[in-house]
Length: 457
Image (cartoon, rainbow, N blue to C red; front, top):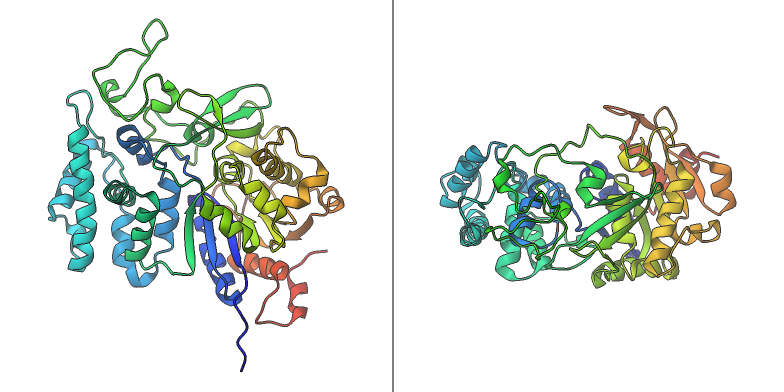
């Protein structure tokens, strides 16, 4: 019996937390289609424990990558998942005590871990610990372990040990038993930090991913822990403290972002219009995408823009040089599917003027066009180059879907079933979303007539 050759892969653009709820859906679809699955994830995260690692070591923002890698660890490696998904205590003193027991090997977290894996992970944590001690300048500057993610600490230790960001990702995937068929690809492969700014319709500019998406709560640490502050003359004061920031870096990029809320969000004064990368001094730059990211897009059968933060998870990958051209011009790439969020958030508001499906599609197209140096709003004539289908939920709190306008532009709309969200809006039902995506992509294990069970005319 002749075997059907594997199909071209699927590429998912996403951030961390929100899209983790859809991982099983994506895994199931690629298993049935017998194709590869690649997640392209930005490295502009500068919130939570990532902000402290960036302050001390520089380097990429790894929070979203770590979140996806941990989510992909199968149940057979639950001991790895439990350890690397663990966060230290919010209290800095208790967190430091827990960290010291981890690197010494006495922590109860090690009990379920087989010795070979324990010693491999512990060696990376000890390497990081040595680097932390070398960089400490007490009493003004010491590493703050408050709420630190062990997954972030492991990835940073592995990156510093190997001198390679992708080697660190590979090592975590290997010890976590992540399927060889699944790849987590950083949008930019770099040992340096990359930050973004957002321009609002009223002319306001917001700097840093955390400030755009989830502004920090006041830190519980004393002011002396801050690597920089502004004096009475408005200039950055000279400090004896040493950190990984270049002299003259924007103070907004240097402030601690360890504590922030993902549920309580203050609305922005007006809509976000565009996202761009900046250097440490706030000047716009246009970094090139990771060649591996461009390669998986160019050889894919479908790209999916997942739910989550449109402007801090999806757009930072799309504006990278090389990505827009790969999406809009690769002949094998037939399906470009936008899964619309089930609610309006800080990035897609304000609630007095919320974004609709047309605005989501236009934002994706604009980012893809700006990736190729074509600045400004993207006209309807280019929308289909970046989005061929919109999957959406219909109900209270969900974004409005202007079906007639989208379909005139060649973008097909597919309604999906969902349920009421925990706080607001709607949430996708896994089976319903899988059915909608299979109807678009075509299933290899069911007859064609099954499509009409999901599509809404």
